[in-house]
Length: 616
Image (cartoon, rainbow, N blue to C red; front, side):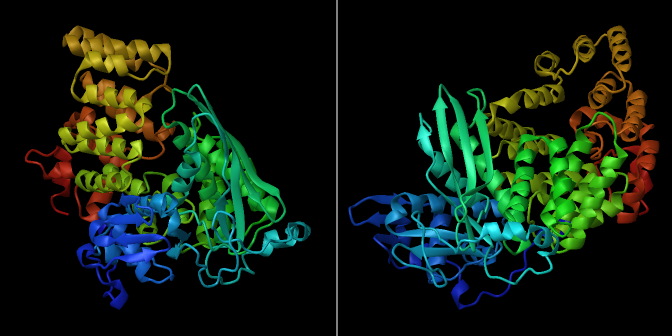
């Protein structure tokens, strides 16, 4: 099974990797702090105290044991999680909490340095780690400054050759420090939120040969937050990236959400820059940062143009090809009609990314996402390869894997994976929404309700669509009408007619509503039409739309059919007309060759097509 690939190797623990039992750990000092592991307590000479979560204290002890050396994520898993498989989100959250303690009561005792793809280092106050030559005002490493004016003259040569000349170096090329933002209004916690975001996203905050500075202003008035952020090269005072982020009162999160956006752009920029292995020409670095900003803004048409110029100027810059694959693919999926040339451009960019970085998962995931869903076996091979590798630019392989499991009918595996992702990132509303969907597909209604409640606390704006799905599954047609999505008036009228006919259970009204749904324009809401026709007792028409779903390639239809496993469409699987569809779609051949069957075929009364898999 695919999930077998997710298990971590567990080498034998060495003398410095013994599991940490807090009850047996002796107190120790960090600068002006006394750390008592058994009590999970930090204490200052002035009597201030703070209690840490058990896992956070374990990580602090593990870092202290290393005596200033780097501690890898695998080391932390062995010593603090007992070798149990955990995702990056769990480690990121723990480091983030420890960093918050370091910035609060711990400012008298220590800081945590991060070196991506290497690990973490504990630095007691007043000490300088080996290899560090100077410190900035914020306590972060101040590397040598580069002569950007000279690099600008060499840009034409460097842009084409820097990958070939990349030296082997310890630590990242770039790190970032936060210069306090000028804050007015109520957003006084912005700097702390930004530092927490950088930690949770594994952004290097020390040990870079080039240190970039993140700074700007924050205004909060009447609930509206406006952030003007800049990423600056202090050696030349040149601005690498600048952007304005606005959060309206109705948008959840306020200053914390704005900080997360700034952190996301910084994370993306440094991931691409550090993958190069050497300092980049400033205009190339700035262009890549621009693709990162356009990604979060959803402006992929402009992102494609910027990425094309990056790849033209620097054909060996892997991050540029990632940006082109991402933006071209996003634009392709979002257009009302299929653009084969745009899709081919996204695929070529993914292939180029794989050629340049065969040891990174990003290119394989990009190609998997863009490829024709009917090429099931090839897509699975790409996904299997991606799972074995580490991400550079974007870590989304678990979500992609969960979608593939849903699409292939492996609902229980999809649920378990999404539940693990929810535990890793409980702060993301999308994690709870994914569990909500998978729980409903597996009949776990209580878990679905709990996930709905968690998502509501984080992002109330997501609730209408989730309440709509819940109402449809429960056949509560009045609530479904209340929360239904509306794209155009004709769709609204047809959907209302369908829900009211279903509520009345009148055959004549159902027939009239089905005719109204069938008359909707071909470019309208094809997934909703499939669902409504299924509920109104028109499975043959719904299955015919499934074929059109794949052939017309309208938005949202080019990624496969994971939604088929929703409870509202369950009856389709039992209709005799569904068997020819699974033949045409390629899934029947895949299930037979893979010698597996969807979970539905394991039930007491499986669909008729399952008999074709009995002799696999």
